[in-house]
Length: 617
Image (cartoon, rainbow, N blue to C red; front, side, top):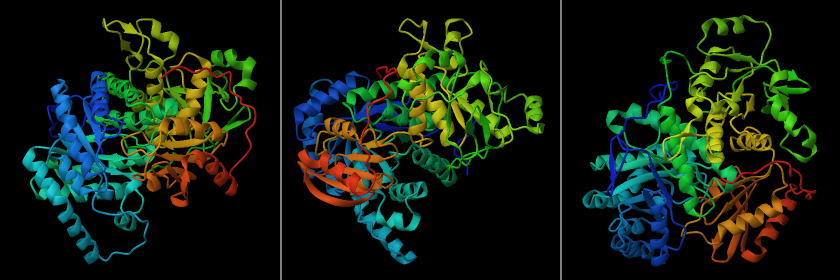
Protein backbone atom coordinates (compact mmCIF):
# COMPACT_ATOMS: atom_id res chain seq x y z
CA UNK A 1 0.00 0.00 0.00
CA UNK A 2 1.12 3.53 -0.76
CA UNK A 3 0.06 6.44 1.44
CA UNK A 4 1.56 9.28 -0.60
CA UNK A 5 3.02 9.86 -4.02
CA UNK A 6 6.57 10.32 -2.76
CA UNK A 7 7.61 10.40 0.92
CA UNK A 8 10.80 12.24 -0.07
CA UNK A 9 9.22 15.07 -2.04
CA UNK A 10 6.36 17.29 -0.87
CA UNK A 11 3.27 17.13 -2.99
CA UNK A 12 -0.17 17.81 -1.63
CA UNK A 13 -2.61 14.95 -2.11
CA UNK A 14 -5.08 15.60 -4.94
CA UNK A 15 -8.70 15.59 -3.76
CA UNK A 16 -12.10 16.61 -4.93
CA UNK A 17 -13.59 19.84 -3.61
CA UNK A 18 -16.24 19.75 -0.89
CA UNK A 19 -18.10 23.01 -0.30
CA UNK A 20 -18.96 23.92 3.29
CA UNK A 21 -21.22 26.86 2.74
CA UNK A 22 -19.08 29.40 0.90
CA UNK A 23 -15.79 27.73 1.88
CA UNK A 24 -14.22 25.12 -0.37
CA UNK A 25 -12.18 22.33 1.19
CA UNK A 26 -9.73 20.22 -0.81
CA UNK A 27 -8.82 20.50 -4.50
CA UNK A 28 -7.00 23.80 -5.17
CA UNK A 29 -8.24 25.48 -2.01
CA UNK A 30 -5.77 26.45 0.74
CA UNK A 31 -5.60 24.30 3.85
CA UNK A 32 -8.49 25.55 5.96
CA UNK A 33 -8.30 26.39 9.67
CA UNK A 34 -11.19 25.56 11.95
CA UNK A 35 -12.09 25.49 15.62
CA UNK A 36 -14.98 24.90 18.02
CA UNK A 37 -16.81 27.15 20.45
CA UNK A 38 -16.91 26.13 24.11
CA UNK A 39 -20.13 27.58 25.51
CA UNK A 40 -23.53 25.95 25.99
CA UNK A 41 -25.27 25.68 22.60
CA UNK A 42 -28.51 26.86 24.22
CA UNK A 43 -26.83 30.17 25.05
CA UNK A 44 -27.51 31.83 21.72
CA UNK A 45 -25.76 35.13 22.34
CA UNK A 46 -22.63 33.54 23.79
CA UNK A 47 -22.49 31.13 20.84
CA UNK A 48 -22.77 34.01 18.38
CA UNK A 49 -20.13 36.06 20.21
CA UNK A 50 -17.62 33.21 20.39
CA UNK A 51 -18.15 32.33 16.74
CA UNK A 52 -17.59 35.92 15.62
CA UNK A 53 -14.45 36.13 17.77
CA UNK A 54 -13.07 32.99 16.13
CA UNK A 55 -13.93 34.22 12.64
CA UNK A 56 -12.23 37.55 13.26
CA UNK A 57 -9.11 35.69 14.43
CA UNK A 58 -8.89 33.83 11.12
CA UNK A 59 -10.98 30.73 11.78
CA UNK A 60 -12.60 29.68 8.51
CA UNK A 61 -15.03 27.01 9.77
CA UNK A 62 -16.65 26.90 13.24
CA UNK A 63 -18.00 23.79 14.94
CA UNK A 64 -20.75 23.81 17.59
CA UNK A 65 -21.79 20.80 19.64
CA UNK A 66 -25.39 19.59 19.33
CA UNK A 67 -25.88 16.87 21.95
CA UNK A 68 -29.68 16.92 21.84
CA UNK A 69 -32.48 17.73 19.41
CA UNK A 70 -33.16 20.86 21.47
CA UNK A 71 -29.57 22.04 20.98
CA UNK A 72 -29.78 21.26 17.27
CA UNK A 73 -32.97 23.28 16.94
CA UNK A 74 -31.27 26.28 18.54
CA UNK A 75 -28.68 26.25 15.78
CA UNK A 76 -31.34 27.97 13.67
CA UNK A 77 -31.21 31.01 15.97
CA UNK A 78 -27.42 30.98 16.22
CA UNK A 79 -26.95 30.86 12.45
CA UNK A 80 -29.59 33.52 11.86
CA UNK A 81 -27.95 35.78 14.43
CA UNK A 82 -24.57 35.33 12.80
CA UNK A 83 -25.84 36.12 9.33
CA UNK A 84 -27.71 39.20 10.61
CA UNK A 85 -24.43 40.43 12.09
CA UNK A 86 -22.65 39.94 8.77
CA UNK A 87 -20.70 36.83 9.79
CA UNK A 88 -20.88 34.20 7.05
CA UNK A 89 -18.43 31.67 8.51
CA UNK A 90 -19.76 28.13 7.88
CA UNK A 91 -21.16 26.33 10.91
CA UNK A 92 -20.66 22.62 11.63
CA UNK A 93 -22.90 20.69 14.03
CA UNK A 94 -20.99 18.18 16.14
CA UNK A 95 -23.12 15.08 16.69
CA UNK A 96 -22.59 12.13 19.01
CA UNK A 97 -25.07 9.37 19.90
CA UNK A 98 -28.28 10.95 18.54
CA UNK A 99 -29.20 10.59 14.84
CA UNK A 100 -32.35 12.61 15.47
CA UNK A 101 -30.17 15.55 16.58
CA UNK A 102 -28.21 15.26 13.32
CA UNK A 103 -31.43 15.28 11.31
CA UNK A 104 -32.51 18.51 13.00
CA UNK A 105 -29.10 20.16 12.76
CA UNK A 106 -28.87 19.50 9.01
CA UNK A 107 -31.74 21.93 8.49
CA UNK A 108 -29.70 24.86 9.77
CA UNK A 109 -25.96 24.38 9.35
CA UNK A 110 -23.58 23.96 6.43
CA UNK A 111 -22.03 20.75 7.66
CA UNK A 112 -22.76 17.91 10.08
CA UNK A 113 -20.00 15.95 11.82
CA UNK A 114 -20.93 12.41 12.82
CA UNK A 115 -18.81 9.86 14.66
CA UNK A 116 -19.25 6.34 13.24
CA UNK A 117 -18.34 4.86 16.61
CA UNK A 118 -21.44 6.17 18.34
CA UNK A 119 -23.87 7.31 15.64
CA UNK A 120 -25.67 3.98 15.39
CA UNK A 121 -23.71 1.83 17.83
CA UNK A 122 -23.36 1.81 21.58
CA UNK A 123 -20.09 1.30 23.43
CA UNK A 124 -20.27 -1.00 26.43
CA UNK A 125 -16.91 -2.74 26.07
CA UNK A 126 -18.67 -6.04 25.45
CA UNK A 127 -16.70 -8.93 23.99
CA UNK A 128 -18.77 -10.51 21.26
CA UNK A 129 -17.92 -12.78 18.36
CA UNK A 130 -19.81 -11.95 15.18
CA UNK A 131 -20.36 -14.41 12.40
CA UNK A 132 -20.19 -12.92 8.93
CA UNK A 133 -23.98 -13.08 8.75
CA UNK A 134 -24.38 -11.27 12.06
CA UNK A 135 -21.85 -8.64 11.04
CA UNK A 136 -23.70 -8.08 7.76
CA UNK A 137 -26.93 -7.69 9.70
CA UNK A 138 -25.30 -5.03 11.88
CA UNK A 139 -24.15 -3.15 8.81
CA UNK A 140 -27.69 -3.23 7.44
CA UNK A 141 -28.95 -1.79 10.74
CA UNK A 142 -26.39 1.02 10.45
CA UNK A 143 -27.50 1.66 6.88
CA UNK A 144 -31.08 2.11 8.05
CA UNK A 145 -30.01 4.56 10.76
CA UNK A 146 -27.60 6.56 8.59
CA UNK A 147 -29.50 6.74 5.29
CA UNK A 148 -32.02 9.41 6.38
CA UNK A 149 -29.22 11.84 7.29
CA UNK A 150 -27.39 11.22 4.02
CA UNK A 151 -30.54 11.88 2.05
CA UNK A 152 -31.28 15.06 3.99
CA UNK A 153 -27.75 16.41 3.52
CA UNK A 154 -27.94 15.53 -0.17
CA UNK A 155 -31.25 17.33 -0.60
CA UNK A 156 -30.22 20.44 1.37
CA UNK A 157 -26.70 20.69 -0.03
CA UNK A 158 -25.05 20.07 3.33
CA UNK A 159 -21.56 18.67 3.76
CA UNK A 160 -20.60 16.00 6.27
CA UNK A 161 -17.55 14.87 8.18
CA UNK A 162 -17.23 11.17 8.85
CA UNK A 163 -15.05 11.59 11.89
CA UNK A 164 -13.65 8.49 13.55
CA UNK A 165 -12.16 8.88 17.02
CA UNK A 166 -9.74 6.35 18.44
CA UNK A 167 -11.49 6.73 21.78
CA UNK A 168 -14.97 5.85 20.61
CA UNK A 169 -14.73 2.87 18.30
CA UNK A 170 -17.83 0.73 18.59
CA UNK A 171 -17.82 -2.66 20.29
CA UNK A 172 -18.53 -4.23 16.91
CA UNK A 173 -15.44 -2.67 15.33
CA UNK A 174 -13.32 -3.33 18.42
CA UNK A 175 -14.20 -7.01 18.40
CA UNK A 176 -13.43 -7.53 14.73
CA UNK A 177 -10.45 -5.20 14.17
CA UNK A 178 -9.26 -4.31 17.65
CA UNK A 179 -8.38 -0.93 19.08
CA UNK A 180 -6.22 -0.18 16.03
CA UNK A 181 -5.76 2.24 13.13
CA UNK A 182 -7.29 -0.46 10.92
CA UNK A 183 -10.41 -0.42 13.08
CA UNK A 184 -10.60 3.37 12.80
CA UNK A 185 -10.32 3.23 9.01
CA UNK A 186 -12.87 0.43 8.58
CA UNK A 187 -15.33 2.25 10.83
CA UNK A 188 -15.23 5.31 8.57
CA UNK A 189 -15.29 3.34 5.31
CA UNK A 190 -18.47 1.54 6.35
CA UNK A 191 -20.28 4.87 6.53
CA UNK A 192 -18.61 6.21 3.38
CA UNK A 193 -19.83 3.24 1.36
CA UNK A 194 -23.40 3.92 2.45
CA UNK A 195 -23.06 7.57 1.41
CA UNK A 196 -21.62 6.61 -1.97
CA UNK A 197 -24.38 4.08 -2.58
CA UNK A 198 -26.78 7.02 -2.25
CA UNK A 199 -24.69 9.12 -4.67
CA UNK A 200 -23.64 11.48 -1.88
CA UNK A 201 -20.04 12.66 -2.05
CA UNK A 202 -19.92 15.93 -0.07
CA UNK A 203 -18.00 14.49 2.83
CA UNK A 204 -14.54 14.60 4.39
CA UNK A 205 -12.79 12.06 6.61
CA UNK A 206 -10.97 12.34 9.91
CA UNK A 207 -9.04 9.83 12.05
CA UNK A 208 -8.40 11.50 15.41
CA UNK A 209 -6.46 10.17 18.37
CA UNK A 210 -4.74 11.65 21.41
CA UNK A 211 -1.69 9.52 20.57
CA UNK A 212 0.25 11.07 17.65
CA UNK A 213 1.67 7.71 16.54
CA UNK A 214 -1.82 6.17 16.31
CA UNK A 215 -3.17 9.26 14.57
CA UNK A 216 -0.38 9.34 11.97
CA UNK A 217 -0.67 5.63 11.24
CA UNK A 218 -4.46 5.82 10.96
CA UNK A 219 -4.45 8.72 8.49
CA UNK A 220 -1.77 7.11 6.36
CA UNK A 221 -3.68 3.85 6.32
CA UNK A 222 -6.90 5.68 5.41
CA UNK A 223 -5.26 7.45 2.48
CA UNK A 224 -3.64 4.21 1.30
CA UNK A 225 -7.02 2.46 1.42
CA UNK A 226 -8.68 5.30 -0.47
CA UNK A 227 -6.01 5.05 -3.17
CA UNK A 228 -6.73 1.32 -3.47
CA UNK A 229 -10.47 1.92 -3.73
CA UNK A 230 -10.01 4.11 -6.81
CA UNK A 231 -9.45 7.62 -8.07
CA UNK A 232 -12.99 8.73 -7.24
CA UNK A 233 -12.37 8.02 -3.53
CA UNK A 234 -10.35 11.23 -3.40
CA UNK A 235 -12.21 12.82 -0.49
CA UNK A 236 -10.64 15.66 1.54
CA UNK A 237 -9.05 15.00 4.93
CA UNK A 238 -9.59 16.82 8.23
CA UNK A 239 -6.58 16.59 10.58
CA UNK A 240 -6.47 16.85 14.35
CA UNK A 241 -4.90 15.43 17.49
CA UNK A 242 -7.76 15.08 19.91
CA UNK A 243 -7.41 15.74 23.64
CA UNK A 244 -3.98 17.35 23.11
CA UNK A 245 -4.16 19.26 26.40
CA UNK A 246 -2.81 22.74 27.10
CA UNK A 247 0.27 24.90 26.91
CA UNK A 248 3.54 23.96 25.27
CA UNK A 249 2.93 20.21 25.55
CA UNK A 250 -0.33 20.46 23.61
CA UNK A 251 1.24 22.56 20.87
CA UNK A 252 4.07 20.08 20.53
CA UNK A 253 1.73 17.08 20.40
CA UNK A 254 -0.47 18.82 17.81
CA UNK A 255 2.52 19.73 15.65
CA UNK A 256 3.82 16.16 15.71
CA UNK A 257 0.52 14.73 14.50
CA UNK A 258 -0.77 17.47 12.21
CA UNK A 259 2.56 18.82 11.00
CA UNK A 260 3.98 15.45 9.99
CA UNK A 261 0.91 14.57 7.91
CA UNK A 262 0.82 17.99 6.26
CA UNK A 263 4.44 17.48 5.22
CA UNK A 264 3.37 14.17 3.65
CA UNK A 265 0.84 16.14 1.59
CA UNK A 266 -2.11 14.83 3.62
CA UNK A 267 -4.67 17.24 5.02
CA UNK A 268 -7.10 19.83 3.67
CA UNK A 269 -8.46 21.34 6.87
CA UNK A 270 -7.07 21.26 10.41
CA UNK A 271 -8.16 21.88 13.97
CA UNK A 272 -5.74 22.23 16.88
CA UNK A 273 -7.57 21.04 20.02
CA UNK A 274 -6.40 22.88 23.15
CA UNK A 275 -7.74 22.82 26.69
CA UNK A 276 -7.74 26.60 26.50
CA UNK A 277 -10.04 29.26 25.10
CA UNK A 278 -10.61 28.36 21.45
CA UNK A 279 -9.20 31.66 20.25
CA UNK A 280 -5.72 30.38 21.18
CA UNK A 281 -6.03 27.48 18.73
CA UNK A 282 -6.06 29.72 15.66
CA UNK A 283 -2.48 31.09 15.75
CA UNK A 284 -1.13 27.57 16.23
CA UNK A 285 -3.14 26.17 13.32
CA UNK A 286 -2.23 29.07 11.05
CA UNK A 287 1.45 28.69 11.93
CA UNK A 288 1.33 24.98 11.02
CA UNK A 289 -0.28 25.78 7.68
CA UNK A 290 2.28 28.51 6.95
CA UNK A 291 5.09 26.13 7.85
CA UNK A 292 4.01 23.52 5.32
CA UNK A 293 3.49 26.24 2.73
CA UNK A 294 7.13 27.27 3.20
CA UNK A 295 8.22 23.63 3.03
CA UNK A 296 6.36 23.21 -0.25
CA UNK A 297 8.55 25.95 -1.74
CA UNK A 298 11.81 24.41 -0.48
CA UNK A 299 14.24 23.27 -3.15
CA UNK A 300 14.02 19.58 -4.02
CA UNK A 301 16.65 18.81 -6.58
CA UNK A 302 15.89 15.20 -7.34
CA UNK A 303 13.22 12.57 -7.01
CA UNK A 304 13.95 9.81 -4.53
CA UNK A 305 10.95 7.71 -5.51
CA UNK A 306 13.07 4.59 -5.98
CA UNK A 307 14.65 4.73 -2.49
CA UNK A 308 13.02 2.28 -0.12
CA UNK A 309 11.60 3.46 3.19
CA UNK A 310 13.39 2.44 6.36
CA UNK A 311 10.09 2.35 8.27
CA UNK A 312 6.62 0.86 8.07
CA UNK A 313 4.37 3.91 7.62
CA UNK A 314 1.35 2.09 9.05
CA UNK A 315 2.82 0.60 12.22
CA UNK A 316 5.42 2.01 14.57
CA UNK A 317 8.69 0.14 14.99
CA UNK A 318 11.91 1.74 16.15
CA UNK A 319 14.81 1.52 13.70
CA UNK A 320 17.23 -1.16 14.92
CA UNK A 321 20.57 0.49 15.61
CA UNK A 322 23.45 -0.73 17.74
CA UNK A 323 24.32 0.70 21.14
CA UNK A 324 27.11 3.25 21.43
CA UNK A 325 28.49 4.85 24.59
CA UNK A 326 29.70 8.44 24.86
CA UNK A 327 31.08 9.74 28.17
CA UNK A 328 29.13 7.16 30.14
CA UNK A 329 25.87 7.76 28.26
CA UNK A 330 24.50 4.96 26.10
CA UNK A 331 22.34 5.54 23.06
CA UNK A 332 20.98 3.44 20.23
CA UNK A 333 19.43 -0.02 20.36
CA UNK A 334 16.79 -0.16 23.08
CA UNK A 335 18.36 2.69 25.08
CA UNK A 336 16.24 5.75 25.79
CA UNK A 337 16.37 8.64 23.36
CA UNK A 338 19.12 11.07 24.32
CA UNK A 339 19.32 14.86 24.32
CA UNK A 340 22.36 16.44 22.66
CA UNK A 341 23.55 20.05 22.95
CA UNK A 342 26.22 22.13 21.30
CA UNK A 343 29.30 22.99 23.37
CA UNK A 344 28.38 26.68 23.43
CA UNK A 345 24.98 25.94 24.94
CA UNK A 346 26.43 23.46 27.43
CA UNK A 347 28.85 26.13 28.62
CA UNK A 348 25.93 28.52 29.20
CA UNK A 349 24.12 26.10 31.55
CA UNK A 350 27.06 24.23 33.09
CA UNK A 351 26.96 26.40 36.23
CA UNK A 352 23.32 25.58 36.99
CA UNK A 353 22.88 21.91 36.07
CA UNK A 354 21.51 21.22 39.57
CA UNK A 355 18.68 23.68 38.87
CA UNK A 356 17.68 22.19 35.51
CA UNK A 357 15.92 19.24 37.13
CA UNK A 358 15.05 16.61 34.53
CA UNK A 359 16.03 18.86 31.63
CA UNK A 360 19.67 17.79 31.59
CA UNK A 361 22.07 17.99 28.63
CA UNK A 362 23.35 14.44 28.14
CA UNK A 363 25.81 14.51 25.24
CA UNK A 364 27.90 17.38 23.89
CA UNK A 365 27.83 17.41 20.08
CA UNK A 366 31.46 18.34 19.52
CA UNK A 367 32.73 15.62 21.87
CA UNK A 368 30.63 12.72 20.56
CA UNK A 369 32.43 11.92 17.32
CA UNK A 370 29.30 12.51 15.27
CA UNK A 371 29.64 11.92 11.54
CA UNK A 372 27.88 14.57 9.43
CA UNK A 373 26.61 13.40 6.05
CA UNK A 374 24.83 14.53 2.94
CA UNK A 375 22.45 11.59 2.40
CA UNK A 376 22.67 12.15 -1.37
CA UNK A 377 26.44 11.59 -1.33
CA UNK A 378 26.65 7.94 -2.44
CA UNK A 379 30.40 7.70 -1.91
CA UNK A 380 30.20 8.96 1.67
CA UNK A 381 27.32 6.61 2.48
CA UNK A 382 29.22 3.68 0.95
CA UNK A 383 32.30 4.47 3.01
CA UNK A 384 30.18 4.68 6.18
CA UNK A 385 28.50 1.34 5.53
CA UNK A 386 31.84 -0.37 4.84
CA UNK A 387 33.28 0.87 8.12
CA UNK A 388 33.51 -1.79 10.83
CA UNK A 389 32.88 0.80 13.54
CA UNK A 390 29.37 1.83 14.58
CA UNK A 391 29.06 5.61 14.43
CA UNK A 392 26.58 8.26 15.47
CA UNK A 393 25.44 9.88 12.25
CA UNK A 394 23.45 12.96 11.36
CA UNK A 395 22.61 15.18 8.40
CA UNK A 396 25.12 17.92 7.69
CA UNK A 397 24.01 21.47 8.38
CA UNK A 398 23.21 23.93 5.59
CA UNK A 399 21.91 21.40 3.09
CA UNK A 400 19.13 22.89 1.00
CA UNK A 401 16.75 20.05 1.84
CA UNK A 402 13.63 19.70 3.98
CA UNK A 403 14.65 18.21 7.33
CA UNK A 404 12.20 15.29 7.22
CA UNK A 405 13.28 14.36 3.70
CA UNK A 406 16.95 14.52 4.61
CA UNK A 407 16.69 12.25 7.63
CA UNK A 408 14.37 9.78 5.89
CA UNK A 409 16.97 9.47 3.16
CA UNK A 410 19.76 9.04 5.69
CA UNK A 411 17.83 6.30 7.52
CA UNK A 412 17.11 4.53 4.23
CA UNK A 413 20.66 4.60 2.88
CA UNK A 414 22.82 4.22 5.99
CA UNK A 415 23.20 0.81 7.60
CA UNK A 416 20.70 0.49 10.41
CA UNK A 417 23.44 -0.29 12.94
CA UNK A 418 24.52 3.37 13.02
CA UNK A 419 22.48 5.43 15.55
CA UNK A 420 20.99 8.63 14.14
CA UNK A 421 21.01 12.08 15.75
CA UNK A 422 17.97 14.09 14.64
CA UNK A 423 18.00 17.88 14.26
CA UNK A 424 15.08 20.28 14.14
CA UNK A 425 16.69 22.57 11.54
CA UNK A 426 19.77 22.25 9.38
CA UNK A 427 21.30 25.42 10.74
CA UNK A 428 22.24 27.13 13.97
CA UNK A 429 20.60 30.41 15.09
CA UNK A 430 23.74 32.47 14.36
CA UNK A 431 23.40 31.54 10.68
CA UNK A 432 19.97 33.14 10.38
CA UNK A 433 21.43 36.64 10.45
CA UNK A 434 23.14 36.43 7.07
CA UNK A 435 22.01 35.96 3.48
CA UNK A 436 22.63 32.18 3.62
CA UNK A 437 19.84 31.57 6.11
CA UNK A 438 18.07 28.36 4.95
CA UNK A 439 14.49 28.32 3.70
CA UNK A 440 13.41 26.04 6.57
CA UNK A 441 14.07 28.84 9.04
CA UNK A 442 12.76 31.80 7.05
CA UNK A 443 9.73 33.86 8.05
CA UNK A 444 8.61 37.22 6.82
CA UNK A 445 6.99 40.15 8.53
CA UNK A 446 4.03 42.14 7.18
CA UNK A 447 6.34 44.08 4.84
CA UNK A 448 7.81 40.91 3.36
CA UNK A 449 11.12 41.38 5.17
CA UNK A 450 12.84 38.29 6.52
CA UNK A 451 12.57 38.01 10.30
CA UNK A 452 13.82 35.58 12.92
CA UNK A 453 11.23 32.97 13.86
CA UNK A 454 9.01 33.53 16.87
CA UNK A 455 9.20 31.01 19.71
CA UNK A 456 5.92 29.45 18.53
CA UNK A 457 7.36 28.94 15.05
CA UNK A 458 10.56 27.50 16.49
CA UNK A 459 8.57 25.19 18.75
CA UNK A 460 6.28 23.95 15.98
CA UNK A 461 9.16 23.46 13.56
CA UNK A 462 11.11 21.40 16.08
CA UNK A 463 8.07 19.34 17.05
CA UNK A 464 7.05 18.68 13.45
CA UNK A 465 10.49 17.76 12.13
CA UNK A 466 11.82 15.76 15.06
CA UNK A 467 8.46 14.38 16.19
CA UNK A 468 7.52 13.17 12.73
CA UNK A 469 10.79 11.26 12.41
CA UNK A 470 10.47 9.77 15.89
CA UNK A 471 6.99 8.51 14.99
CA UNK A 472 8.54 6.93 11.87
CA UNK A 473 10.85 5.02 14.23
CA UNK A 474 13.89 7.05 13.14
CA UNK A 475 16.30 8.54 15.64
CA UNK A 476 18.27 7.67 18.77
CA UNK A 477 19.10 11.18 19.99
CA UNK A 478 17.89 14.69 19.23
CA UNK A 479 19.41 18.16 18.95
CA UNK A 480 17.21 21.26 19.05
CA UNK A 481 19.35 24.01 17.57
CA UNK A 482 16.67 26.31 16.21
CA UNK A 483 16.03 27.73 19.71
CA UNK A 484 18.84 30.01 20.83
CA UNK A 485 18.08 30.03 24.58
CA UNK A 486 19.80 26.89 25.94
CA UNK A 487 17.33 26.27 28.76
CA UNK A 488 14.35 26.53 26.46
CA UNK A 489 16.03 24.31 23.88
CA UNK A 490 16.52 21.63 26.54
CA UNK A 491 12.92 21.89 27.73
CA UNK A 492 11.58 21.68 24.19
CA UNK A 493 13.79 18.66 23.48
CA UNK A 494 12.47 16.67 26.41
CA UNK A 495 8.88 17.75 25.79
CA UNK A 496 9.09 16.56 22.18
CA UNK A 497 10.35 13.17 23.34
CA UNK A 498 7.49 12.97 25.85
CA UNK A 499 4.80 14.00 23.34
CA UNK A 500 6.06 11.49 20.77
CA UNK A 501 5.99 8.74 23.41
CA UNK A 502 9.73 8.24 22.94
CA UNK A 503 10.86 9.05 26.47
CA UNK A 504 8.43 9.53 29.35
CA UNK A 505 10.09 11.64 32.03
CA UNK A 506 7.15 13.42 33.66
CA UNK A 507 3.42 13.10 34.24
CA UNK A 508 1.52 12.69 31.00
CA UNK A 509 -1.88 14.33 30.58
CA UNK A 510 -4.64 13.70 28.05
CA UNK A 511 -7.11 16.58 28.29
CA UNK A 512 -9.94 17.35 25.89
CA UNK A 513 -10.84 20.86 24.72
CA UNK A 514 -13.93 22.50 26.14
CA UNK A 515 -17.24 22.40 24.29
CA UNK A 516 -20.94 22.65 25.05
CA UNK A 517 -20.96 19.03 26.29
CA UNK A 518 -18.39 19.71 29.00
CA UNK A 519 -19.72 19.13 32.53
CA UNK A 520 -17.06 21.10 34.43
CA UNK A 521 -14.57 23.88 33.78
CA UNK A 522 -11.79 22.03 31.99
CA UNK A 523 -9.16 24.73 32.30
CA UNK A 524 -9.45 25.26 36.05
CA UNK A 525 -9.92 21.55 36.73
CA UNK A 526 -6.88 20.61 34.65
CA UNK A 527 -4.84 23.22 36.52
CA UNK A 528 -5.98 21.80 39.89
CA UNK A 529 -5.15 18.23 38.87
CA UNK A 530 -1.74 19.26 37.55
CA UNK A 531 -0.97 21.14 40.76
CA UNK A 532 -1.52 17.94 42.76
CA UNK A 533 -0.02 15.36 40.38
CA UNK A 534 2.66 17.03 38.26
CA UNK A 535 5.42 15.28 40.25
CA UNK A 536 4.21 11.74 39.36
CA UNK A 537 6.73 10.82 36.68
CA UNK A 538 5.50 8.31 34.14
CA UNK A 539 1.86 8.37 35.31
CA UNK A 540 -0.69 9.14 32.58
CA UNK A 541 -3.87 10.94 33.61
CA UNK A 542 -6.85 11.64 31.33
CA UNK A 543 -9.13 14.60 32.02
CA UNK A 544 -12.39 14.43 30.05
CA UNK A 545 -15.28 16.86 30.21
CA UNK A 546 -17.85 14.25 29.26
CA UNK A 547 -18.22 10.61 28.32
CA UNK A 548 -18.06 10.99 24.50
CA UNK A 549 -14.43 9.94 24.19
CA UNK A 550 -13.75 9.21 27.84
CA UNK A 551 -13.23 5.47 28.23
CA UNK A 552 -11.75 4.91 24.80
CA UNK A 553 -9.20 7.74 24.83
CA UNK A 554 -8.26 6.67 28.35
CA UNK A 555 -7.49 3.12 27.26
CA UNK A 556 -3.75 3.71 27.63
CA UNK A 557 -4.06 6.15 30.55
CA UNK A 558 -3.46 4.97 34.09
CA UNK A 559 -6.25 7.06 35.59
CA UNK A 560 -9.18 9.08 34.30
CA UNK A 561 -11.23 12.02 35.59
CA UNK A 562 -14.48 12.24 33.61
CA UNK A 563 -17.57 14.40 33.86
CA UNK A 564 -20.49 12.07 34.56
CA UNK A 565 -23.26 14.57 35.31
CA UNK A 566 -23.48 18.26 36.21
CA UNK A 567 -21.33 18.71 39.31
CA UNK A 568 -20.45 15.01 39.41
CA UNK A 569 -17.27 13.20 38.38
CA UNK A 570 -16.52 9.55 37.62
CA UNK A 571 -13.01 8.20 38.18
CA UNK A 572 -11.44 5.53 36.01
CA UNK A 573 -8.57 3.10 36.17
CA UNK A 574 -7.66 2.59 32.53
CA UNK A 575 -10.99 2.39 30.71
CA UNK A 576 -12.88 0.99 33.71
CA UNK A 577 -15.01 3.30 35.83
CA UNK A 578 -14.38 2.56 39.51
CA UNK A 579 -15.80 5.57 41.36
CA UNK A 580 -19.12 7.20 40.43
CA UNK A 581 -20.91 10.51 41.01
CA UNK A 582 -18.23 12.09 43.17
CA UNK A 583 -19.00 15.74 43.99
CA UNK A 584 -16.73 17.93 41.90
CA UNK A 585 -15.38 19.68 45.01
CA UNK A 586 -14.01 16.37 46.30
CA UNK A 587 -13.01 14.73 43.02
CA UNK A 588 -9.35 15.82 42.78
CA UNK A 589 -8.65 14.57 46.30
CA UNK A 590 -10.42 11.30 45.51
CA UNK A 591 -8.29 10.98 42.38
CA UNK A 592 -5.19 11.29 44.54
CA UNK A 593 -6.58 8.57 46.82
CA UNK A 594 -7.18 6.33 43.81
CA UNK A 595 -3.59 6.78 42.64
CA UNK A 596 -2.43 5.85 46.15
CA UNK A 597 -4.62 2.74 46.17
CA UNK A 598 -2.88 1.52 43.02
CA UNK A 599 0.61 2.13 44.34
CA UNK A 600 1.56 4.93 41.95
CA UNK A 601 1.61 7.81 44.39
CA UNK A 602 4.82 9.37 45.68
CA UNK A 603 5.07 12.42 47.86
CA UNK A 604 6.19 15.57 46.07
CA UNK A 605 9.64 16.98 46.74
CA UNK A 606 10.80 20.56 46.42
CA UNK A 607 10.27 21.81 42.88
CA UNK A 608 13.37 21.90 40.68
CA UNK A 609 13.97 23.05 37.15
CA UNK A 610 13.75 26.75 37.98
CA UNK A 611 16.70 27.40 35.71
CA UNK A 612 14.80 26.37 32.59
CA UNK A 613 13.46 29.39 30.76
CA UNK A 614 9.90 29.50 29.55
CA UNK A 615 8.52 31.49 26.66
CA UNK A 616 4.87 32.29 25.88
CA UNK A 617 3.28 30.27 23.10
